Amino acid sequence: VWIIRIPKTHPVFSGGSANEVMFLSSVEETVRWMGGTSVQFFTGDQKGIDLPNTGHLESITIPQKKRAYYFYQLDDSHPLLLAPSLQEFATIEKALESMQNVTGDLFRPSISQQVHIASVQKQNDNLIVQFASNSSFADPATSQWMLEAILLTAKEFGFRSVMFTGGNVDHIGPYRFNEKIEVPVAPNPVPVH
Image 1 (cartoon, rainbow, N blue to C red):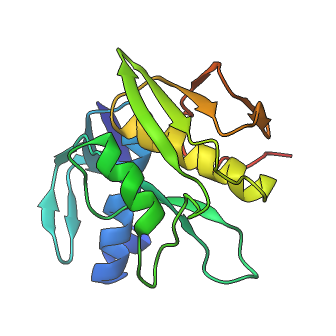
Image 2 (cartoon, rainbow, N blue to C red):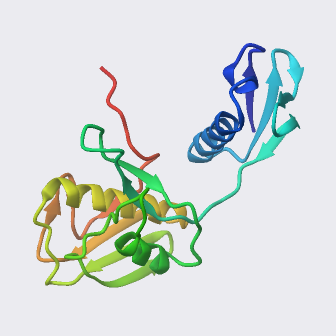
């Protein structure tokens, strides 16, 4: 259980519905990635928060979600980020398929059309992703981002590690093929200087 204390002057109390939704979504995602299952809110020392659109809110339960990760980039002047899908998927296979075929204005596919997944095998909490021999990993940076998107998607489905095989490569960036790779703690790490 996480406890979040918000000062009475916090912008969420006067920022409008979009600000409120963004605030609650950010809290949910942060707590979820840190392994939390619920949040209790306080305004100063008083239990609960009174939001303009949601009303009085004392706690939220953090749902488990099974989503895919896509590329998101506002424009060329902004960094590439990995962002979760808005919808959930019944299986890891469906999530991986969507990562190659997503369309729309918000997200781009995180698995290139030149990459072909030959098979997906589940071994307890390890996922084995085998790439077909005709897969192309021509852009090392984008290919590394792709592997990170797959690792994050695997975590959404409860896997603790992923082994990449095939594809006629032995590594992409820091990720060695034919070895278990632990799923990341969270998406989009930012180096602290």
